[in-house]
Image (cartoon, rainbow, N blue to C red; front, side, top):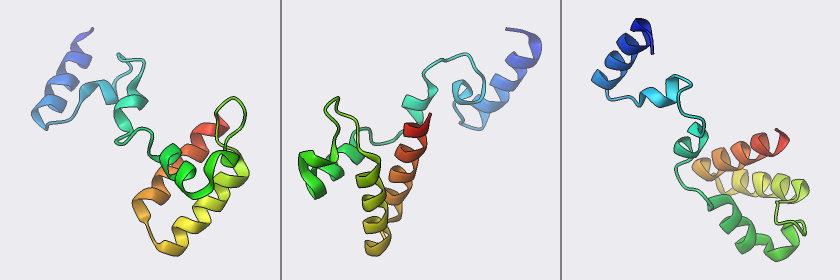
Length: 92
């Protein structure tokens, strides 16, 4: 770690931020960014049952889109953000 990275880490720690989320020193940073893992799966299973899942256990895109529309209707913004994140990560 060079002097600049040490300086940035010191500033980030001072402000209470996790320096691993900013720098690329930790390979699994997305796991820390997801606050409630398994939330989307739980909601999909509750709303649509097992038909919302592929045989390999992944969520079908058509049911993900249906869930996004349903979350918009009930105005659940945090669930809507989680569903959009799931849709984005599925495309990767």
